[in-house]
Image 1 (spheres, rainbow, N blue to C red):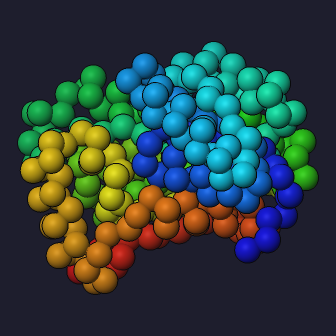
Image 2: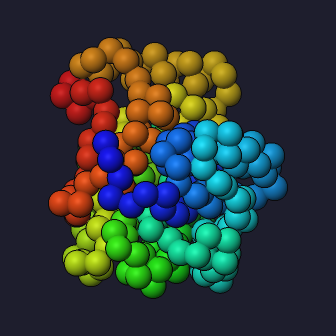
Image 3: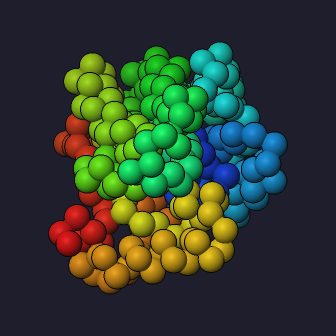
Length: 258
């Protein structure tokens, strides 16, 4: 698909690993300049590796440190992106967190854990979008792509708080699509099971293999998605879909059918 902007500027949160890293690489392969946002010390080396691979793929890239829970850090990240590359055409909100807590075990879901997940998955997404809005509006084709989840639509997933946060992401996407139109489009992607996604980073190998197998067995297509598949949609929504806004694209291999 041809981009509506040639050699644009894309800022990706959660870009050190998984879907965020794959998305940064997808944009880089199309000649874009990338802000590779990193959440903390533990993933800095991975973020630097993502930036290196982006440059090798044909785009320019810089690592930008940002804890999306901190509004001042979000404002700083947007400013750093503009200082490096002159503007922001697309923002991909991929930063996310979770913890596996069985849904029926309500006592195990503390208020602190609920807030922790919301701070990253929802409030951080809003703060990042707000920080980038002036430059997105100044772009000739500004766009925001939010990472939601199948959990938002079916109320399942790693925890009640995670599912609720992603449901709120869908509503946030609709609200921002209305608020930022006509100059900025806002869409979301709701993946099902994605290899190398959040579960891979919060579960041990045995537990992760069990979750992967369960999701494959429970899907109509009997497979799981790769980060590159989700990244391809993030590229399409951000760069190649001028008529789409306020849409949540489900990519779950048919998990919702069974």
